[in-house]
Length: 218
Image (cartoon, rainbow, N blue to C red; front, side):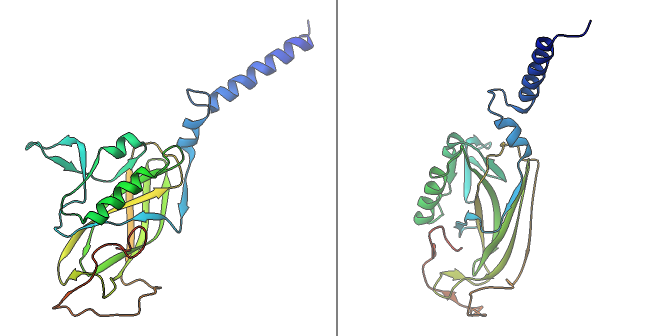
């Protein structure tokens, strides 16, 4: 006996529901599927680059301590919620202005639509990093950069190294699971607005050690 038209329609509807269920997350919104599939590149990323002149890490984990009961340093991490952001602490040696910028940067992130990628770095005191792009795939983030001299009116100490924390605001919702990361760079930058080439290698240059723009061209 041939199936009735009603049976065929009902079977088609069930199949459509099953297909939709396979594309949706547990809440039916499809958000988990989006998280797994998203990837992209930002060639003009929003990034904060605070530095710690002592050379110690800039960011610490307020939810974890070492054997001495002190917060451990933050390694590469995807910050996906305001609750996790609140657990990130700033080292005492970081300038007060940069401490405020870090807190504002984290607090102003919309974690329903954005993710913060944190990565430690190091650099010569009289140099700065220019971030050229950041790319992401599920579980993986990498960025490209170049190095150049800081402006002469920025405080620095010749032949000294400082610690950086790079905080990228990615325009996408990612899972907090980070399975890989990377970076590539060159020195000096090929294209730059810098109009100077040398800072006296034996001098400590006076100036403002904090940001020269909203988030800090550090």
